[in-house]
Image (cartoon, rainbow, N blue to C red; front, side, top):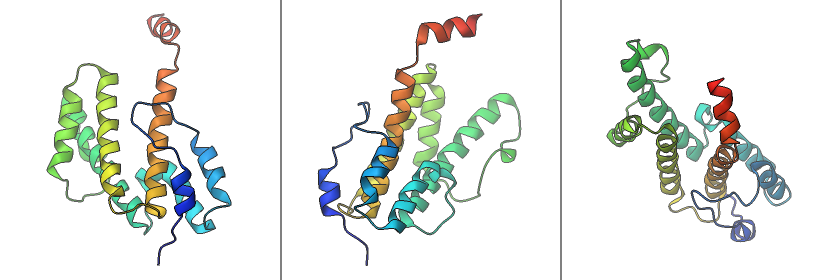
Length: 172
């Protein structure tokens, strides 16, 4: 029987793509430490490297399968452009959902790299929303929350870069 964390989850602020994260992933882990089981904390900690997850936790397995499939499709598109063998850079050999190919193709067609990355992360967010369906106060909700928090942290780092100095560094 799964553990339910009604108080903790109901006290968490809602996350919205494109907004500033309310706190860091590490602060989230610290907040959870006294409120949830140690095994569940360890599972949430794995969210940081979830794309390489090899365990049995269903939500992380589904997320990893989605992420690996998306990355494999991006590799295939980039390999064709560079005239190299994509099999050298792909992981796994599972079935790819057709919508994942569409996501990768749409992102690769965008001439603005940052906009393409934003679109990929919006699709990741949507996939996390799908994983959350039916999970309101359990570990699965906390895992998807943690993964969304990591996406928001990534965009906070991207948006806080001093763009003029970065451009000057690239040009010089």
